[in-house]
Amino acid sequence: MVKGIEHAAIASPNPEKLAQWYVDNLGFIINYQSKNATFVKAPDGSMIEMIVSEGELARPRQKDPGLRHLALAVDDFENVYARLKAVGATFLTEPVSSKGNQVVFFTDPEGNILHLIQREQPMP
Image (cartoon, rainbow, N blue to C red):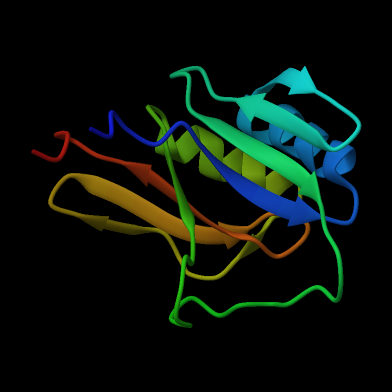
């Protein structure tokens, strides 16, 4: 039986540089590194593996088929949003507040789509 999602992977031409962006701007830590991969870990234990990419960089759109974004849960939406704006993150939407939730879509430096979210109440 599946217990949960341990990590997702992002293929990058420079995994170490991308991993450092997640550390510097989103509060992750580098928790494992090899010659082929760098893992970053969020405070809740969830991880993203940065692996060396091959081929051309594709720029997916939000509604293209397949996996489209990683949602990042925060406790202080306004503060994290302001910090991302200050470092020049590219936002795909304006922040939206609805039913006690705050959300915004943005990209990391390589164009991977991220979803910043703060929920008033966790999903059931």
